[in-house]
Length: 76
Image 1 (tube, rainbow, N blue to C red):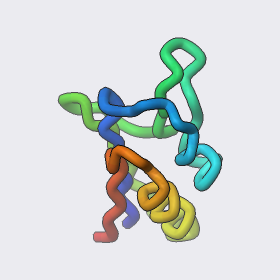
Image 2: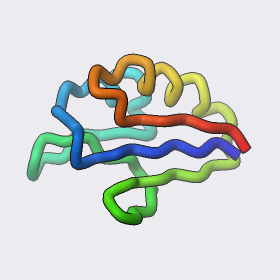
Image 3: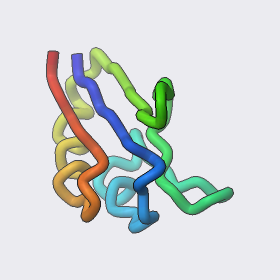
Image 4: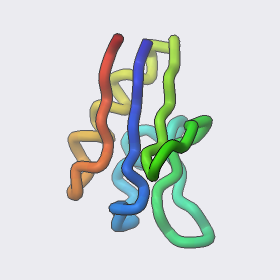
């Protein structure tokens, strides 16, 4: 299981996550912040749990590219 978490309220809208993982992230037209697709929100944290391990590399690259370090990627 790949677990990706986005702390959206701290997003600065740089778009790096979308460039690195376009199948998991997109930019909101409303506020210009990142959206983690198919995620569940709890207390400002958006979490995607996926059995698809092919997303791991792209999500890790998005996490590394994020200048404000608001994306975490774990494997369980």
